[in-house]
Length: 591
Image (cartoon, rainbow, N blue to C red; front, top):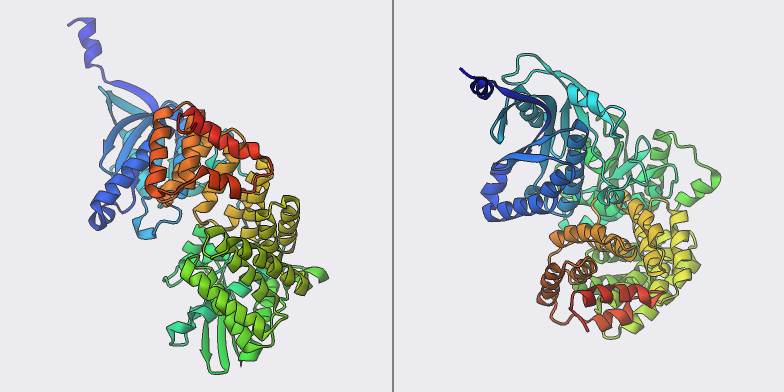
């Protein structure tokens, strides 16, 4: 028997990092919507998973329905690739219903593998598959051999899960969980500008309506929102925005899971029972890590004492978390409301309608908030949100005279600031009106004032970022978006457009494309993001893709007009808007 024959019979082996990935709950997703699930999975693979694997030097060994097996020459590359995929999926899933999201889990092992043509076998592969099964949804588990290779080379935190006995593996496997954090900088391939919140962080869940009357939902929501507003003013505390906290409304929640999803240590939950002129509020502060109760209380009061109860809840939380506030910080917590119960009721109803962000609800919001200021002409929050309702009319062309809507919004916001200089929403509304009036320096100043009063004001950070974009200060805008999205992890999809706009203005067209694709997945009917995507493709010479996207613009909105956008968008430097036109011109889409 010759040497060549012996070589052919000898088992071929090599050391490799093996990544195993599959979809959590794939059978359930297919049962609910087979066509949609397959289409979404293909899109995720094409636009995120496969490019990240190629970027990190991986080789897809085989696809297995909802999963894949990937080989890397380096454990560092394998872990970096996995983190990039999981972070990307957080963005792609944001805003989608939880029961429709495609969520991956990943296992990685560095070990000896057997080569059989293009396929691979052996314990090195089997352990990766078992690690994948141990990973939580959206998570990554790695073996000790992998941990040893990436230690001191990567910045990701690792949690030791100890030795685990897994199927068909003789000895227990030491398992480590990789901490996967996401931020807008991570989306763009940069280090996060802000650390993930640690001990002094809290989410206030929407209080349950126990009144037996569904029409009283607005009242329970209003109590929750006012507590969020008060706590947000504490600089030492990281407070999740209303928008993200309220994604858990009406759901049976498991506090540790909420804590993990929102990235906070503490969770406040409670209930409201309103009956006639009496109100009962119960609340409890829970440690999201241990599940232990830190503080709980029940308040039975007259309806006229509702603001005192909100203040007491806020003060109890401050005490429970051992927050040492200065005298000025203590004063900042107090919200100047009204002693007119009917005005407050109109305000709560109006604010609730305003948050719905649709035309009919905005009309109701205006009417209710107008009634609130008529009942109490010194009620600053009602003026601020009435200004915000008129701003909705202006931006969305919901009124017969958008110019008059902007003028009215500006007047109301100024009045709100005069009545209560410490109310963040008053400065925010004034900032937005200044922005659309092209008075950008004043808009920036008012937004910064709002944030100084409320460091956790997610809407304020995002609005400041947008204004900085229009002022030509896009690098600074990125830091604002980072902070706003950290405070509001379930942020509205329009924020992705703002983020892409900043990257576009900085000439980072590839980064803009990645963010815009995520926005379009969440909102397929956007015209502005498709225009920006077409322009980005044009600057990169990707003509066919630019032309295809431009065609989609007019499918979505046959009346789209570049001239209209040029006239209304408040760019300080007109050349910043012309950068969009130039990209379209390069693709032969405009003259």
